[in-house]
Length: 494
Image 1 (cartoon, rainbow, N blue to C red):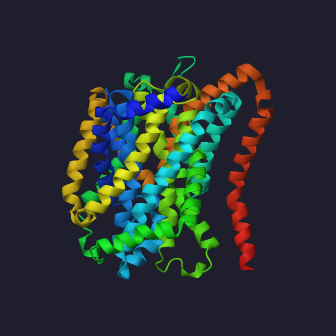
Image 2 (cartoon, rainbow, N blue to C red):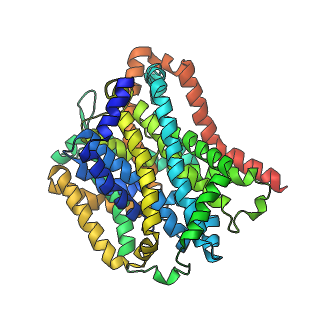
Image 3 (cartoon, rainbow, N blue to C red):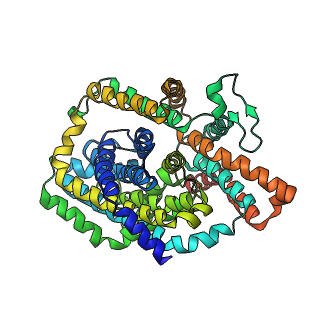
């Protein structure tokens, strides 16, 4: 195991890997600064470009860009009151009021420091769990894996924002799309409409680009500019330094919020948007003066931003150990694994523990590098939000088309990007969860494969295994949670 850790460090120190990390961090920060561009969008844009790369280099490139998006998103959130990415929305409650009251630098310093250090806490948790993860996951059989995959689809519908029924429908639709093409075990073609392109199934790159990238680009193409909303002052270094020191002064809050991010990130399917809000709620509940939250206090910035990046370390635990994405972004990262010829899961840890260690180091270094870049360039990055969308949209659209075509040099991939773009726009207009659809799509092969294996090995008795019963109980509890929460809130009002 020590040899694997040393080998992982050696993989990280490869000059090509270091160069790709240095290139990916500014890209991730830039996409984070642009309103509406999430880590999911960053991965969707960059995923086609890793085709043909060395596995460690390609995964490092994707992970570094994804990990720092939320750090960049804090800038737009605090300055303009517009979340740079969905998880940054929890920072809005106190970050924007701080900016409006002349504490821009302090809010940015607290956000950058807590994001970077929170990401390191997630990496420590990941590295600490790796030695024990393999024997643990090897005790998990096919029935437990089936129910874990099912829990991932259900929980993102339950705990994500929006209507529960619509979330479940979106997850089910993703499962249906994954069934198009030849069945993985029997090779029987399904729903292919006599169209040869669909025999190989729906490809993840056109699906992700269409669902997530194109709708955001269309918003930018409307020509709106955010410059008139930028009423905040340019940050000064002394204020930024004060905000960084605030993280150390509230170290217990920082650690608690980071741990919440790690734990929530480990649970399949819910880490992305949920962890920052849970951390914010926990900070408010533990505060001696909870009524001040929402008026512009630094604790309301530290809590969500600490959990924002810490959750990625937790999400990597289930992604690497079980092959089940800990968040919607991790589901796209799994697509990167598959493109590079790797499949995360118990076998991955047994055969490629060195790559897992290398990715943990990448996550830590990318977070720290992002903080340094944001501190040095925050004065200039403020101006990015002033760029008209009519300029940004064509550039991003060109990247999408080139990336989709470069995936497999197939023009039909580009066509299907726009097919799924229409689909994504309709889903957003009707308020259906696109991340739930993507998770359903990614988890469907696991659901189908492990259900087949479980039935062949145990028959219907697989439903009575203790581990399966426990996970099934968690799924039922998740489905009932909205009703329980509604009753509790109703009782509190009475």
